Image (cartoon, rainbow, N blue to C red; front, top):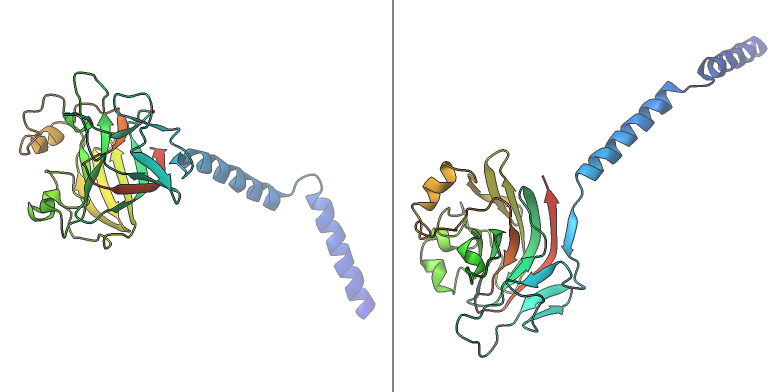
Length: 252
């Protein structure tokens, strides 16, 4: 009886092997899924803008290179404001590349009572000496000790500066790193700020909704402000020590 059972099982295995000869549908399905995942990964790739070793993807606004006021320390870019500066002189960093629809991920750390910001849509033009004249700003701030922290919620860390306030204060204490993800999507008319894992700001990015929002801000009469869907990413020199690291961007 045992012999019959073994022979029957052997026959079944042989028949199964014969039927699968030349094509294994299960394996083919796995391979198809794997290929689709590879294609999805390629569409989901992040581009590293700063890896902690060089400024190769950045320059100072309206300049060719990066001054000694920006230094690389412990895999971060750190801005040290000059003790003296010429009237109107600024050391804002901007990307060499231009971006339209994207997710930008970075970490920032502000000094005590410090102020800085993250711009997008920056247009370099010699008639515009400051990056903030075109680029909207996501605020970087010590909410507790900088005067802007008491000037209204639209001036606090994470805010779309002077336009949309964060829903809550989720900043880490001064001296600690904050993880910030900024999304700008003109195709869906959506902008968003996620700070330390929580989405705290949402706003439109296209007209007429965008212009209606700007018209109620300090930028209402700035002829070039927020007018360029495609532009550079910028990091602000506001005269205080600030650090940024792990900067990457993904086009969407």
